[in-house]
Length: 285
Image 1: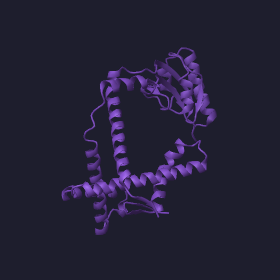
Image 2: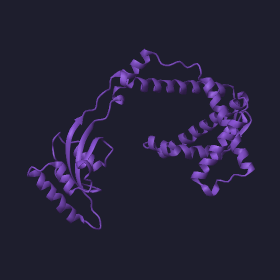
Image 3: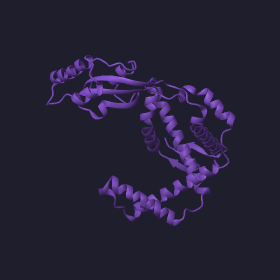
Image 4: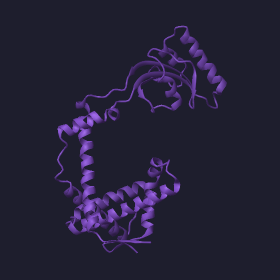
């Protein structure tokens, strides 16, 4: 079944293509939803997206002034350059292809102009809006916990099997227990000896999970026992810890202002599209 929007026909294929574009993120967010219900909702949202896109394009074509030829040629040159870098074998465009790309570019520019016009009167958020957002979203604004950690690592390879790697890392641990300086032991035994094995400050997720599980449960000054990750055997030492903190308002004010402005812009565009829908003739055929 096809849709027509103010006389413009939308084929099922276009809606299916939109569904496939949305699918990866959609299935991640709605993973718990029953499959049949999820597919029905995905299809409905895809249909809405396509209809809205057609309405915006129609309005942009109706209101948009012609795009100057030099601007179109410059944009086309950028497309050609991208094609040349990404797919050299298909970079040559014939006259018909260039005409289609220029037409798409012109429409895109007109759409951008239209949306900028729709949003031109948006004012920035008030001080009260910024303060309310800060107070209501402190958990999201928190900086992540950080630790400064060094490690000694012995990789396993065709040259160093598991037993040999463990023997070497065990020698390193033994020297540490006898009072040797961590940085010197790292320089002597580690496969990553630079800076005495110092990784600097890290947050959870920067390293592999097996590494995080050990080091983020250590105290400052503590040296770990030997532990293993997918990269080999490790010994770690934690030098410092910065707890998760809510930054002062002044530090995140610009970020909050930008986020609120973007929210206001999205809402203004949604209201504009709703107005277009209310006047549009949308039919299933």
